[in-house]
Each structure stands twice: as structure tokens, then as C-alpha cells.
Image (tube, rainbow, N blue to C red; front, side, top):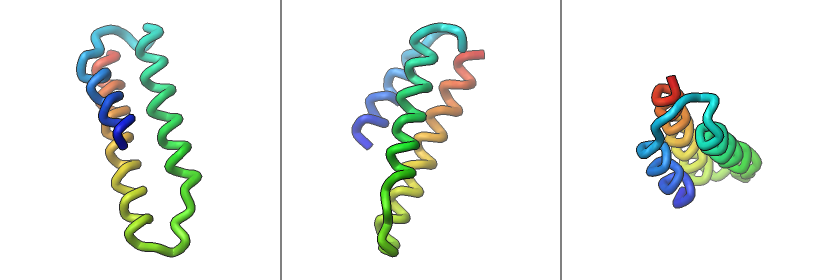
Amino acid sequence: MGEAGQLEEEVDEFVGKKTDKSYRLLEEMLTKLLLELDSIETGGQDAVRQARKESVHRIQAILEKLERKGL
């Protein structure tokens, strides 16, 4: 989640449009993190499942913030 925090800072500083290269890069990096989280097997462990779920929600919120800024 350290990478997500760094990307969130970049999203906070982002000024531009959806067509900007920096927007597409941020969107791609955040999507990549979601895919990495999706590949994590929980092995039936509730703590792992909950941590993954919280991480996914956080990244989705960052993506939504980026989308709002790109309008």
C-alpha cells in the first residue's frame, strides 16, 4: 500500500485532462495495483481477505478522485 500512497500524492498534485499522458500513467499504475491485489489468494484467512478488500476500496477511491480531477 506504500505505492498506493505515493500514487495518491501524485493524484492530489495532478492538474490536467484525461487525455494527458500523466493522467493515463496514473490510471494505468492504479489499475495495475488492483490487478496485483486481485491475484492475492486469501487461503480462507479472514484477515488477509479484509486487508485486500480495504486496499481495493482505497485504490478505487483514488481512481475516482483522479477521474474527477481529469474532467
